[in-house]
Image (cartoon, rainbow, N blue to C red; front, top):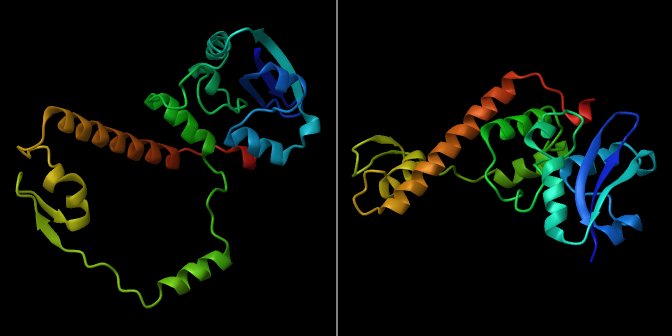
Length: 204
């Protein structure tokens, strides 16, 4: 099987997407890339307006992934016209991204009309919730560190998951510490994104 790297380019707006794929499928025109941003762009701008460019052909998948990693870097993702979501290369869809990469992605998504409920959906949810009693909330005390707080929060960060729990081994503690760091970073990124006036693809 032959592999390739390619670019899909929209001359009117300057938007572009770089990817890696099966050379035979790409030549036949059966593959135009994947990802939320590029698919959103195809919905906004007809495919006949896009230009497809073959950047390179390779005999192995590893060679193609290497070329893609050199074409789609963290710096490339800073370009507001780039429609790629993650750096190129094998395994990048599951790797941990830096704070800067996540911030860049957050700013690109700012302002997109995602997840907004229609009036019909809101009414349906409201009717479904009527008559249901809210779950009781109360204050509890962690037996390991003696801190007290709302039951939902304490169950998430303390009790059996408390870092002072003597029954936790080093691996479990490191895992909990990493989760707390990731949560703090997400909260920080969300605050920065809300304070930034960046415009998403759909608003341009």
